[in-house]
Image (cartoon, rainbow over all chains, first blue to last red; front, side):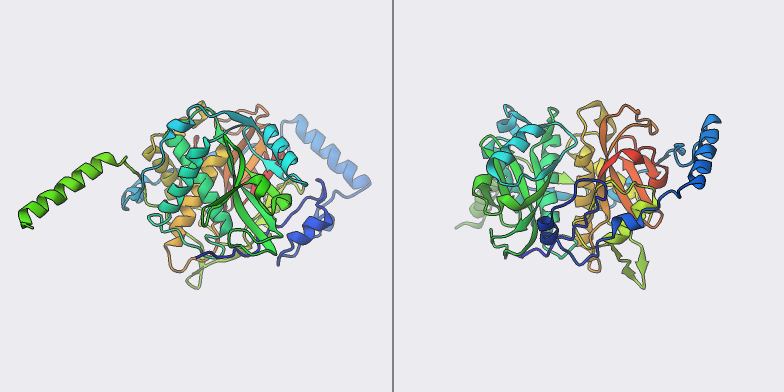
Length: 251
Length: 194
């Protein structure tokens, strides 16, 4: 059974960054009131007070102290392994063999941007810590999609509004793809599998039009693909009906 | 069919089938999050409250903040040990040592995402938890040294938790944990996503 995800609540707060266009603002309107940015930012008082504060900070800096800038002692988490070992293990089905990915090629994030620019009218913003992304072998990506669907039962994965909805399905798909890369000893780079926020102007894979939704973006040896992780529908980006309203991709 | 022969065939089928099937793998049980509760139910905080806590932690207004859900639970600040243990155990289960991860090409977002997914799956097994887990990823420029991590200007990603003790930043390989207000690279934050 397919479940239509609720609207994603994505508060945007970019008072000094590039402004979001009015069109996108309306697409991602949520039940959360947007803060009025500039009025809420504490501003230094003007005139002589600012001068006094600056002078005081300069004097403090001469003595090696500056408010809010000195790093505090760093704490550490002490992992509670005893709590973990008390519980039963979760058994997952055999994953697809990684061998197909041994000869995979790379894309830079810029390559991905170019590909989106070629295939969409309004390319999304792309966020990635790594500059190089490993493209999965296409057959492996298809096999992994099947594995993810099969793993949902032992993982007891089921839709629940907010706790496990569309963004969690997409995040889960990406997390397990990365976990299998770690399992395979893949050291060449991060996987070109990310999740994206999309404004659904047209229905796709059982998800109705008219709301925001999260899907998976997979870069394979055959190009960029969009995947609905709730039912496994996978299409080339050029055939995805909402390709022009993909807001952002997170690798 | 003779019962003995039936059992023999069954045993043969089971053993040959097992030999032909590649082995699956196991993960440690997902870590049940310790949540702040009010009247027995998990305390609910809005995504706007997350944003407010970021401001209280001293994050600049220009930093990009995104939340995928409207309402979140709140973690108990002194209960993160089982989450950290699960992350390290899950990686060990697939043959990867988190503690040595920074000696390899490293992407902290991978571990933040894995921890958020594992915790959400654990919460999904609890009957009274309906809220999104307040575990996200923080991306910043490492302009200042933070504990073992150098201030070399590289982009880096960490786990961020919303807790009753405020926002906490966690680096899995070094196990470093810092309140956001004391995090030395606040000025270099480029992205926070829950």
